[in-house]
Figure (tube, rainbow, N blue to C red):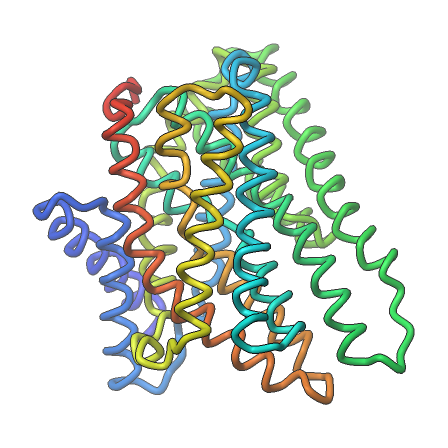
Length: 400
């Protein structure tokens, strides 16, 4: 077994399960995830070589492509109509998810650090699955535009909540040590600002290039790929968010270079699917189905109250901002997936907390709950996105 064989197996497994999913009228991304779960169990039993970790580069590239495309869907002419509702939806869906989950976990466990950590992570939404369903069904309309903007901005809001919560938890775990909460709060704000600033600078540069040159077919594919990789690499050096930075690049390009940038996004959509397949199948391999029986009351509370907080908060935000009727009814269906960011935050939390005296148990409970619930949200999430887009009559409205 080597990396080339493994990549081939992953892509073909994804294709097979996508075909099966389409036969039973489910989104392809659900098939990728299920195929990855099965593949993960096979490798668990038949090989001791953990090659999956060696393929993390593909996951990073896929997320960067997705973020770039999300930014490319955020056209100012559409956002001006929906702008207020987008901000209200992000504010209420993240804050209510945090409040619902943290309150329920505290009532059940009487453990403040656990309640804060799980509440903070519950605020985050992974954009990948939602974007993939939107692309697969060529969706376009108010709900689609709102969804793309919300899942893009959601990460920034969730990062702020997470940073506040983690700072407080560290203080609770080490009451004898002075923690500078101001610094730990300022840091994520600088990370968010830096990410958007980097993306804006690179996006303007690429926009100037586009406006002054009639690009060739090769350039229309090679330039966006190079731009995305450059943005991702610089983000890693300065510890910025690659997702937010690439989203900013796409946003600036589609609004600054408008018509000329369309070929960038069109060609990337045709080139990127193999990376998306690898990303979602790999995500599936990391999900251990043996964790499901261990979900327990805390895990079930996390799952149900996160869904309740997301759906209630998003719908309430849409209602008070007078969003279109389809957004009010179905926006919550697109905010349940968590696989990429949940696993990433779970690992960060684990590494942050195990150094504390009482942190090891807290870290283990947290990571098991997140991994177990992610299995469920990653399967039902894409199905509910498709349901919402179908009900909103936005499927098949986009030309490419």
